[in-house]
Amino acid sequence: MKIFKNKLIVYIAITLLGVLYTGCDNDLEEEVYSSVTEGSYEYSEQDFGPNIAGAYTALATNDVFGRWQTQELTGNAIVLPANPSGWDDGGVYKQMHFHTWNSESMQIEMLWQKNYSGIILCNAAIERIENDVIPAPSEEEKSMGLAELRALRAYYYWMICDNFGDAPLVVTTSTELTPKNSRQEVYDFIVNELNAVIPDLNETQGESQYSRMNKWAAKTLLANIYLNSEVYTGTARWQECIDECNDIINSGRLSLSSNYKDPFTVTGAETSSEVMLTIPYDFDRGVVGNFLFMNSWHSELQKKFNTVYPPNGAGGPKGIPQFINTYNEEDNRLEDSWLTGQQFGIDGEPLLGAYDLAGEPLIFSKDIPDGIFTNEMEGYRMGKYEIPVGSQWSADSDVPLFRYAEVLLMKAECLLRTGQSGAGALVSQVRQRAFANNENATVTDEELMEDSDYNWGYVEDYEIVDQGDQTPVEFGRMFDEWGWEFAWEGYTRRNMIRFGVFTTKSWLSHRPNGDYRKLFPIPQEVLNSNPALTQNENY
Image 1 (cartoon, rainbow, N blue to C red):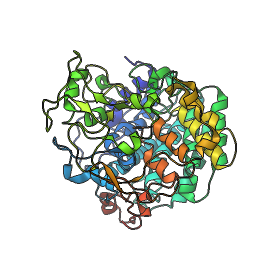
Image 2: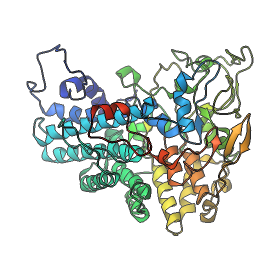
Image 3: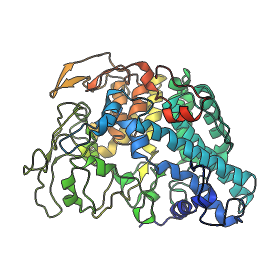
Image 4: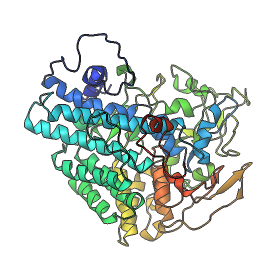
């Protein structure tokens, strides 16, 4: 069981959140269950840690439906078609694949609300510390706590900037309705905030700082923002990204885990030198939300893992064959990321189909006919995060948001884009643990400049019937490396936009549907509640 101090703070914060902050309550009339209020509660130094921890709760809220579905179901690696057990739900998942979402799509609304909820929580926690409402144990801890909250707020704003572009910049607890700031202004705010607070952040890696925004997580965030700067502002910041990556690498605090699966296990990741910012989950302590396996798995897998509840029908999210086909057959990340082939129960007995192929051996096949409808066994399933035997509907495995492998790949990509050498060595370092044959782990700078191995095109009845745009992808092999290393982790949409393929290429049942789809619309509910806002272009 995970018992590190910072995790306990998160657990405590969840129970205290109603006392510490009620500003996120949308009800006009609040029913009072206690005479203790924000104004009458007498805070002590013991409240300092929970005050900070409470701002992290928005990371886990609706993560699968908000962050994960918007970043993965819109991309070329994972799709969620209907099947004989259901999973149509009015087409809400297929909208992501077709790029036909609108301002009322639930995933987009959750993405906006989740991140602005985090921003509001950070603003409130910052004001309590700045105004000495909650006393700090020391001036050093006060500075460090404020730096951590401002860096975490920068992460939430990055999600807004990356997904929505122009958006309101709110840095106080004021309820005044505000118009949108430009994407450039949001970008500048994030960069300036991170550069201001990074010197004050805790440099400890793992253990007491696990799942928290320490100096290395903040630098990884800043490197990410520089990596995508050309998308956000029209101005590339490749060298600035390299500089941040070099600081992290040269610190000696981070390294790759010995095994690819280590960052996704239930125990052990807390002391990892690879995992930085992460979403911590622990069902027994009420920190829940890692239910991706319940969505992706077939219900018969309950007998394989002895889960308390059966997964949802025949399962929803599954691999797109065009992506699966890009893996090298000796790349262990295929087996480490996907459930494939015939499935057996915990007793070793073959599992069987339960829907349209009832009674037949349960064998997950790679190929699917399209992104609209599959049979119950078509498509590889999620196999990346450890799901221990006996798991509840939410798993105890944490979800890393930043890993050291990302730092190495960011630097490699920027070296390629600036014509500098050394990208191949960095990528080979990441590939090393995925290949038993070291020769296959090695890739050169020149190979990373080649076209992607992805076989783009529109699919009907298992076959590509319209190849669509076949323009070679610049640094296409580098694009592929991102996909293999970070499958299922929520990187696909952003990488596709940066490499210029998100709104130009066809895959499975997706055809290009306009460059404006690089941004999501502002949710209609938000527009209705704030007349000062205007909708993003073409929505």
